[in-house]
Length: 133
Image (cartoon, rainbow, N blue to C red; front, side):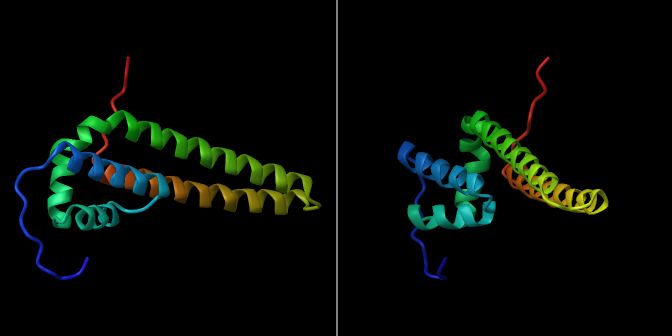
């Protein structure tokens, strides 16, 4: 965001909250960072990134916890599917067993890193996953 002065707006409308939520959720789905989400929301809402972050964490996030959990689950399923495809691809190629295991191990490591990154993104946004009995 440019270093231009943003006029202070005190009241948040329902429309402002919806724009903030949509922007943040879109960034999560794309694997982007919360900082980028708040910067974009700030530009859209003529507010500061700090104000957007404060509003998200203090008010709006609680209304979208189920969507955040759904996004995290979809990301996990996607990564598992990609790993399975990689395994099948490696298995069908003319690679010897030792090379296959090495390549698969590298793929697993890469997928774990991607999952950690995505999980951290969701966690940074304050998602607390509650265990259900």
